[in-house]
Length: 163
Image 1 (spheres, helix red, strand yellow):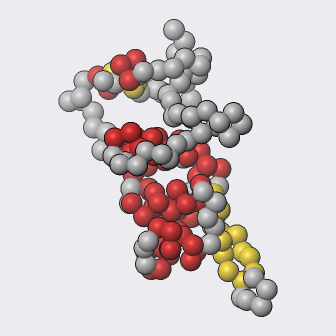
Image 2 (image 1 turned 90 degrees about the vertical axis):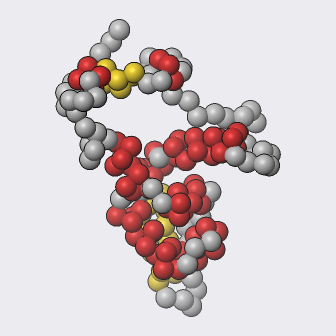
């Protein structure tokens, strides 16, 4: 269980509606097709038709999701031209999109452990071949298990407290 601290501890005196980072993130990536387009972008897909085919959605849905992800700053359009063809856009991850990768990989790991019938897929460290995991670590480098994770309200611009 995550411990709410400070003013957040009294759940009757505040509401997270409209302020919660989870809610705001889900407003951007909360559809299955948006998550699968991001998965494909992480795997190197950049072309519209490839996204539609690999995610298994209509071209209209692909267009809508790509536009939303571009508007959210997770993907950017980059023009390209095949010989003899018109100029088209490909979609590449932005820095913000790349920073979202641990969320997608955490979902991958959870699904692999709890839902997948075929668990041969693994996240691996390409350098040494070992399995890779998604973890929460504090700024001091300590692994933070769920029972030691807290959420507290900080003043804007305030430095984190050292303990």
